[in-house]
Length: 307
Length: 272
Image (tube, rainbow over all chains, first blue to last red; front, side, top):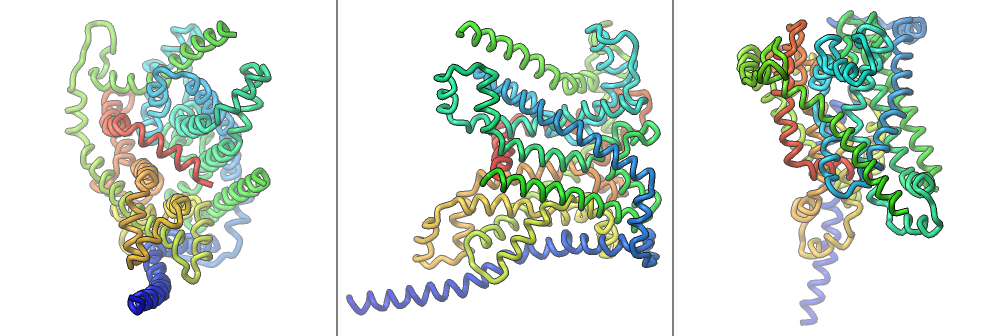
């Protein structure tokens, strides 16, 4: 009996040492498949792109090293500057709108007990559609004469002559922003709704005891409890807004007269319409750096906030 | 106070109802237009309900073929992401091996890099290896995204340590513990990640736009606008094409609503 237990112990320690060695190998083996994908289709393209950005690189692969010329050209490229400005403005307008509307919807629908599932589904539904579908729906929706949107506004007495939504720069942007809110606010809304459901009831009871009204409750209890999720939502939206392309390509075609072109639009046009691969890569790197800066700022703010 | 509360309840219900209508109008209108022949009013002058638009669209464009391509790409992408990233995430969470910290940090940093930034090199690379324009070229870069590793590792880290002790004493290796114990336990996380990956792959637009030029390999997201661009000042057929592309997705959404919404909330809450 005693001998057996010693033997058992021995085999167990042997076993665990064996396991540790096996673990080493198993660990590497388990990480390997993904790592190969990562190296080939994530890391390598980034380095390749960096290299291309220092060349005058044609579609067919004729290349000439030109140092920082693509980047210095970029500084004087008025079209790129315009597109960057459009993107920044779109981000500045759409992020607060989407986050604000998402929060409002979440608070409103969180307070509804009966039929909450219906409202939740209605608001979230557009999010599962693809950019092609929503763009086409909105283009037809916004048609000056046959579109439903103008008809609704007319019936409500808000307008008395047709609005040409897609032929004026400001209106074209308004159209893109409206459709983007309609399409993506459901995502933000669901995150806020989950955040609201996580706030302990005792927080609200404390507020009730002190006789806080609805607004005070929201401002001093609800909103601070959502701060972590708010930062997350703002950052995700900022990054997503900066990468806007599909709506601009499909709803307005970048028009009128290039007024709704964006940074990714610049990459697309320079890379795949005039085939300046080097120049387009330089734009892509600028985009990447802007997004990296936003992400790093997010991490810093969060750390400060959590400590 | 109670009357105030009751008033608030009523007002918020009415506002929510109006908003829900606003959100549903474009979708309902899409469906109504798709059943109405071109040039006919939707309401008034009798009801012109017919499937003629659907028959026309299906005879003019390979909508089902495009949806099939989207389905193939999205399903394979999702399956591979779930398999590879949960496997790697398990190793990062439970096994000590040299370089694991550095590697994980590398993956984590790559999460900040937008896919749009690597369009050009990816195009050149795919052409060099002869995959440009294939459905495979849509799957490979999507599998290389590190988001899944991060989500799964967060989930595995939250599982109790003594979970695998018993299995280890019984002599089970790490690999066995992963698929026998961890995978079955991580169904909610896998569902969330799977939903995210699937929606992302199905809706991807920029990379297919650049990579795919052969009509036969197009995904629905890409084929749809191409088909619609041949119709000017005509709305019934483009809207019908939208409906064809949207209805399966909307049905899946309505069926799995709870899981999808939970999944999104889960990833959002755990993402940091």
